[in-house]
Image (cartoon, rainbow, N blue to C red):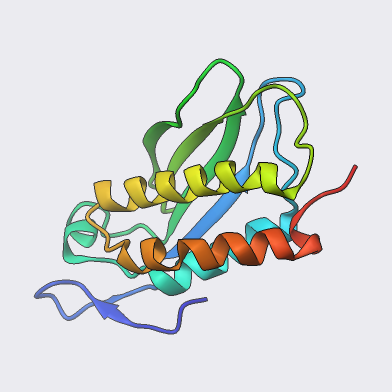
Length: 159
């Protein structure tokens, strides 16, 4: 978890660190990307390290402790589609679903995963910016994040 402490603007109340969670849910048969649960945890941790709550985010979502980005895919789109936010006040989550384009065929190699990863990170940046969060570190580090994922076999599920 992030090792920072923020404060609500002008109230002096401690704000809990915000966790960014990346997960996957696929709704179209055979249209998936082979990213593992290790990928999900690693990317979640890396994004959490790079993004802190902003005054704009706290002003709207003061009680939120998790920002969830659910990755999915569709064969009928050519550009990413972002749905959300859905706010779950009881569990203090804000959730977005990011649908990535997919050609309906499994990737032929690791290089076929670069574009979906790039589109995923660009979409996460768009989500962060729409919430008034500073995504500049994610933008800056995106090429390195993609290279780490592609070069680490544990990030890819082989079936």
